[in-house]
Length: 72
Image 1 (spheres, rainbow, N blue to C red):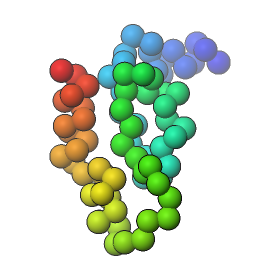
Image 2: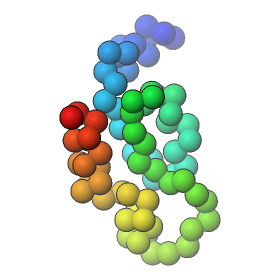
Image 3: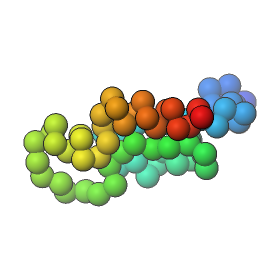
């Protein structure tokens, strides 16, 4: 329902980040044109989890930098 969506994702808030440890394609409709998604962009990678998380940007540094860019 549109009223509920506006109550949890106000249209005047455009600085949005979605962090998805999976395929991130479905988050675009929630973050909007000005938002950012930190997520996997490919399927089938094989490596230790810590290496994959760094490769896909799942680091504190990347999340903080992304948030700062959005809020600048």
